[in-house]
Amino acid sequence: MNKIKVSLLVAAGSLALAGAAHAQDDSPVSLSFKLGAASDYVFRGVSQTDENPQVFGGVDATLGSIGYAGVWASNVDFNDSTDAEVDVYAGVKPTLGAVSLDLGVIYYGYVDAPSGSDYGYWEGKVAASVPAGPATLGAAVYYSPDFFGGTGDAWYYEANGAIAVPDTKFTFSGALGRQEVKGSGDYTTWNLGAGYAFTDHVGVDLRYWDTGEHGFGKIYDSRVVASLKLSF
Image (tube, rainbow, N blue to C red; front, side, top):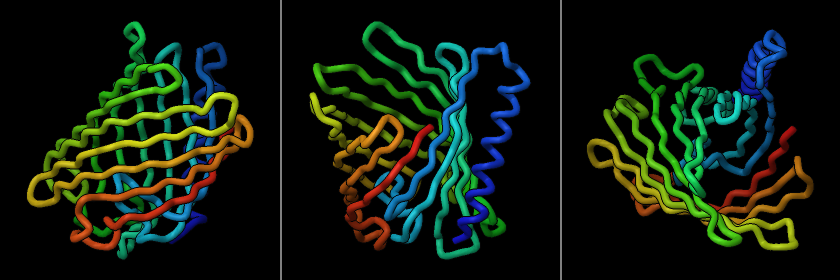
C-alpha cells in the first residue's frame, strides 16, 4: 500500500479542477474537497483493502444548476501490484417534482494493476430519491458493459434509505443491493449504520456490512467499519 502515491493522485486531481475553475472565473463552477480514513474500504459489501485500513480523498465540482464532476482516490489491496483506485465521474441531478434524479457515468481506474488484469471499467448510473417525512428513500441501478477484471456486462441494483434524527446530529441509513455478473459471481449485500456530524465539515460513521456469499472468501464476510470524513 502506497499512501504517498494516493495523496499525490488526489492533489493532482484537485489542482487540475481548481485550475479549470480559475481559468473560467465567470462560469458557475464551485469546488468542494473531501478527505478521510476508515478501518476498511468496503465496496458493495466486499473489502477492497484485504480487511486493512483505508485512506481516501477527492474533489467535486458543481457545474451550473444540476451538473457535477469529480475525481476520488483510495488505497486498495488485491494482493498484487495494484496500489490505488482512482475514480472519475460526471453527471446531472435534475428534479421531477419531489423526486431527485442522478444520471451519471463513472470510470474506476487502478494504479499499477498487473498487465492484462483488465481491472478498469465504466459504469452508468440511474438513481432517484424522494423525501418521506423525516426520511429519504432511494433506489439506483448501475450497468457496466465490461465489469472489473473483464468479466463482461454487469448490473447492480440498490434500494436505500436514511433518516436524520430531529434535534440531534445523528443520521441512520442502510441499503440492500444485488450485484449480478456473468458466471457464478452474483451476490446480495446489505449495510446498516449511523453517522454523527461533529460540525458541518467533520463527521464519523459506524456501519455493519455483509453479503450472502461468505463462501467467495473472507473479503465477502460480515464486518463493522468505522470511518472519519472531512469536507471543505
